[in-house]
Length: 230
Image (cartoon, rainbow, N blue to C red; front, side, top):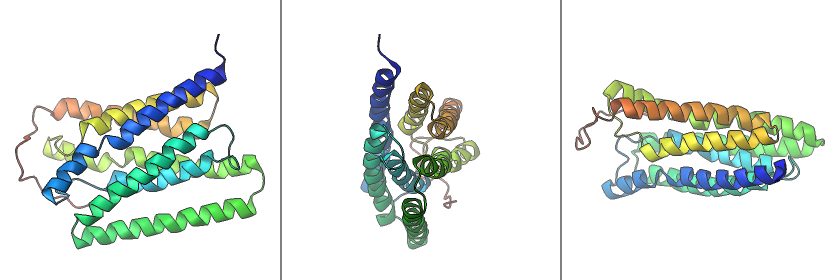
């Protein structure tokens, strides 16, 4: 009978596959943006937030912070690269006011990341203390990543349209939260359980909204309301 570590590894591999799908699920959205040469009413919030989230989780998985978290490193390193690409696409096809906001957020994230790495590596020597500090930060940003689509969900409720809430992204968010919650429960890690449990809830809410407003969505209506980034 497989032991807990083996099962956890298998779940982690499944989590990597689903997380890969999560990171790739916005691709149809970016194809639309690329063809239209405009971001339209799509929002960059989830992608900009996820850049820092992936960077922090990749740092959390490194051996000098936590042990036996190679699968956390691999998927978040890939996620970091793909989210940077998505953010660049948004930057290229946005107007100047949105570009300035994206630049400001990315700059703040970069400064924050460098500061955290420096302070943790040079001022904190014990593994358990590093894990606690970085883990708490990861929880915060993982929650932000999962709930960044709340801005889009508010738009869905107001317009009674799911046109600008990609279905595949919502499904991937839900499944990703479920699998990584199970992964963390098998070898208790509250820093992975908490955000992914909330992520499961966020994904479920998005799917419920999709079911409610799918029929009222005018898929061919390009005259959608203009909504500012929040």
